[in-house]
Image (cartoon, rainbow, N blue to C red; front, side, top):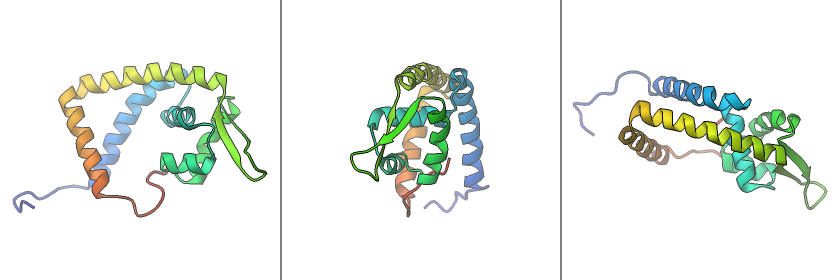
Length: 151
């Protein structure tokens, strides 16, 4: 490590500030569909993986089962996803409804607009560098437990 370089400030605070700013950008665009960014993400995962067991979905999304349940409720209430009995009496499967497919397509179009806005604001080269650095940091700070995210 280069001893001339000494990090200043709180990395956690800086990342949270950046995340809030980026999330607000995406939420403003995706929000035009009535979905929050986390709901769009959940809908996308269920569409990709479903029908899927809630435990497998939580693991894939790297959230706790309780966080998943809390995040699923508004989508179930809106009729965008459904939780049906699984192959045995104790299991359940989560899947996207036809209305959920339509809503996800609409939100995906808004997400693309948000992504293009980030690419323009930061510049494509910086976005690629940011993604590479974030991936590298994620690998270096591999999680000790099953959940990375509690959103």
